[in-house]
Length: 448
Image 1 (cartoon, helix red, strand yellow):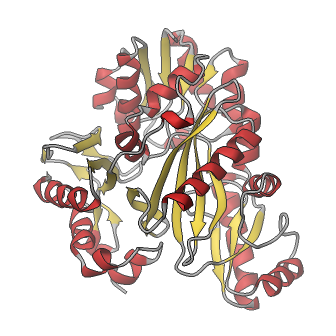
Image 2 (cartoon, rainbow, N blue to C red):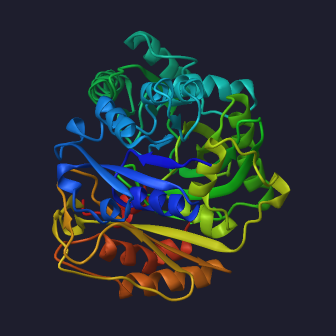
């Protein structure tokens, strides 16, 4: 096992990794921006090193400053968390070339799977279903229009690099497609430094279901079952659930085994998530692989009893997987609600400011992963998520009751949060009588 690990991230994931390190007897070093000097995770870590101003582009995204911090602290490995540089193959390669183990897949696997077009081609080779669309990157408007006519409108123009809902545009006809191509390419160029796009058939009322995988450096791959992440707002996940509602055990197995097959084909190691679109008939289609730990990983941890962050550390340190697929049990129901500092009545606009009081719910089956506390100042410089409320229970009905009770108990004064929206969703007739798709929240709960 490593002696000392640097965490190249902030917020709740930094705190989560620190705790996993300490439980394994590993020293944890964090980097922080000037805005995060007094953060709780910086206080709990064995050492905190400031790497620049509040703006991410001048701190958490500066590879040279992170490597300098790693050298200064004499660490063995670097954990990238999620977001920021976590899926940057160049950062991965630089870490390794400087003598630091990168806690994630190899640069080659990350680069291949980070390119959605290349990942789709690999999925096809190993028999994993993909959405009908272009065979490769779109070269010009006429090619795009031909593909759209072949598969039928509506279609999605999607950036080959990146994620988070950026570089995606919907088109219902030729004119919209021309605009979508230009807009998606430009947004992708600005966000990811890569303007390549491809085209997919748009599946109406689709669901978003993903499978968690874990692989070691010796070719062993297991899946840890699936999560339904269909409850989204502007393509940003808000609620995640396991097991996926309405799925038979056979369909769940098929989707998860496809994810494991793809990871093995890619020579993948460490934790990863294969994301799928699911149609009304429960047919699933691979869309991308996230080569990192996910925000919603606690859902899987609660359902399987496997600590994914500790597993990441152990695998990166050279351990073989200590269990096989038959050992992975999925028990009951688990659910996560993201608590964001947002003004729901103003279109979920970010709501930075000081948290005057924080009262966290407890009780059987309740977990709250967060870095905030009473007196914490939510910065306008970073993502608005301030915590994740996770519940687990033996049945869905019991789990939903626990989640509603826990949300109602939680008290956050000083900033507005997504809690009122979450309660409205969970208490609604629509949620309790339908299987939500990715447009469910915007159709039913967002002001037009």
